[in-house]
Image (cartoon, rainbow, N blue to C red):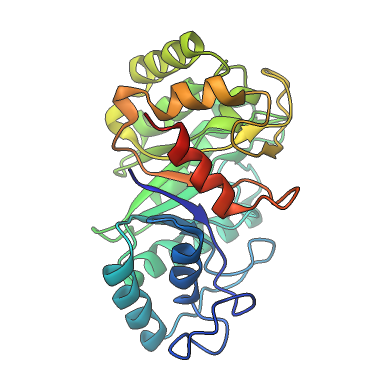
Length: 288
């Protein structure tokens, strides 16, 4: 079972092991993942709230790869900046988004990371079809290294954001000349109207995903419970089994036979003294 968390590369709150990097370093993510009990995971290469280059030295990359090979099963996923908007009709934002994504896929190749995860973004008035066409066009400008695959993440679908409907994901994969796959976020899918709170709902949702997109394209799951009801389009994550998807839905999802080999990455909150370690252990407890 491959399960882990979205972890920081910050030097704060990292083990006092004398061999650990003494400052913010991409390799800190490996130490932190191991401490939480994860064997795969996700990172930001920089603050997701600003336009910034990853700026990873060859020495840092070598240490990250060495520690990953010795400590984890993998894979790692890079999550792109929150500022990236592939669907935008605005030329300036589009160019910044393309440039940022190019930096991320290049960083992924440098780190031997297989996946870069990105939200489609919001069409902000261009319309659904226009927004999807904008995303396809923006992605076509990327020079994606052969070892890297961009994952389009499902969205909660609030406002003009796209990716809430499985059809949006399918459209981009079908019309893009890039080799793309997807990441399913359980909290987002639930908020977008796919009921994952029961075993029946989980099986219906996975069947629909297979029919519309194809499960062969599902390379990662962001496993999160939801603080808001199904179909509300509200994106707020909850502890595993303690949100409105609940224990029954989480158990059914984790044990779905078609998902057995898909890496599970947690983006759960830290609440009531329960953080990533508690949530990872909870996932393992729910696995039959």
